[in-house]
Structure formats: structure tokens, C-alpha cells
Image (cartoon, rainbow, N blue to C red; front, side, top):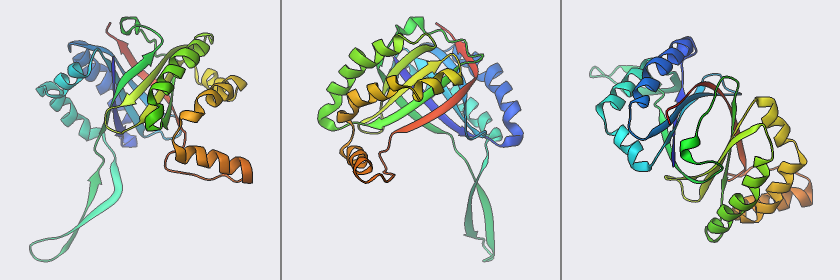
Length: 252
């Protein structure tokens, strides 16, 4: 199975219209697209303007075939009317040497991931998005620990999360674009269920069992913080992102 993210930053004035557009046009197009199993629109918990179009596919080839179709390009073009303008500005000289300023429109960012481990078969992917919540944890793994990390996730983390009734789905996904970057995506009955897990002893225990596979830079940070009691940040920190489901349609 294959997962595709399209990251969007919307103009606050257009959010309601975009939700309708996504549900009425985007999901209908994806429903009729060969190989698409699920399409969902999720909203960032801290940033009300940040959204992700999350889709699951039978394979990378199915997703790429969709991207090459004219229908996808038309939807992408329609999406631009809802996007926010960046805080950055371009400065250019006109033919008569006058300065002109123009806002830079935020472009959608597309990220692609191969699902390395999952708790259910792809044809069982049925998500009722009414109150559900998705938690996305990203981490970098050392080159010589990749296979070990995948095995630990499959043998230890998946069975442990299966024992939590409120955790409906779990996926370990491997980036197609960024080397050694993984995401553990879990789908929960509610935000409260996800928060309870994140603050639990179980989460700390599971992290300890796999943390030796993390990047050396992150391990150094952990060692430094433990020894000196000081918090530091690195470019390879554990990163947890939280999103509410706004729209979700299963096609399988």
C-alpha cells in the first residue's frame, strides 16, 4: 500500500468553501480513480490554516497514474483559489525601473510514502472520520538499523497498539523522497485517546525499545539532555503532528 500527502495552507476566508470543494469534487474524482482506497482531508490541531489531503493507494504506480491524468491537474488548478498568500514578497523591477511587489502564493507540497508495516490489510481500510483523530510521528533512522527498526515496529509496537481499543489503525510509512525518514501514523477514536496514549507509560516503554535505531544526532541530544538536564533542539528531533479528520471517504 502507498500513502500520499498533499500539504495545503488555506486562506482563512476560504476554508469552508474548500471543505465543500474537497468533499463534492475531490473525493468524487478519487472514488472513480483506479487504485484509490481512501481520501481524507485533515486539519492541523495548532494551525487552523494548515490542511493535508491524505490518500491511500494500492500501489505507487496507481498514485502516479492519477497524478499524470488531466483530471488531477484540473483539480490542482481549482485548488489554488483557496490557498493562502505567503508572508514572503517578491521584488522586481518593471520596464520603467519602478519597484513592484507581489505576494507569493503558497503552493501545495506533495509528499509520498510507502507503507512498510500496517496492522490491517489494505482492503480492510474503512475509516469513519466523524470524530477521529490522526497522530503523525516522524523520525530518522540510522542506515544500518533500517531493517531492525521495521522488525521492531512490526513485532513490538503493532501488537502493543492493537491492545488499545481506541487505536483503530497504525502504519509505519517510509518516505520516497527523504532518505531514512519514517512516519508512524496512528488513527484514533478521538483526540483525547491519542493524548492519553502519548502521556502514558506504554508510549515511553515502546520508545525505549526502538530508540537505539534512531539517528546518531538524536541519540546525542537525548544523552546530552539526560546528563545536563538542558533541553536542546536538532534538525532530526522526534516530531509529533496532530490532525483532526474533516472529510474521509473509504472506497475499498
